[in-house]
Image 1: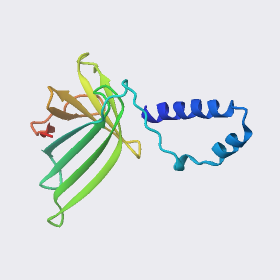
Image 2: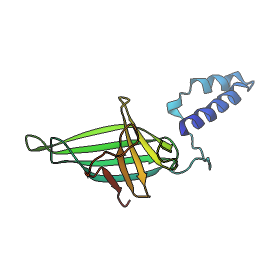
Image 3: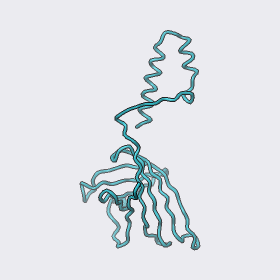
Image 4: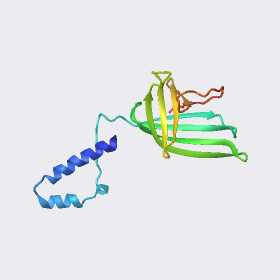
Length: 164
């Protein structure tokens, strides 16, 4: 969203410059590259970047567990944002820990087939794969399947928000 607004402001600025009759100024502006300019935009409709970190130990079929850390960044709770996951598989590689990092975008969706008030945070990886979490209160996310249902298991698939 910020990038679209920045491009819009730049387009308006370029249009205003092109309307000037002084050709010398036009040539000078045209030769200046975007990298040479710094623009500061104060737009009160754009909120501050919010960062939320969640951690938990998730079950693992062939290791001791997955130390899962999810960092979400967004402008507002219902906007598209970005994420980074660091997943450490404990004892996965001949007793050694193995860490994977994944990045991508987030989507916030409202409602599921069984709960119209549910809030789903969907992680969309750079490879297009999705992982879904259902928000449970203000501080817990529980991993759910593609059908937005919790696993039929007694195992814990929840991660908790850590204090910032």
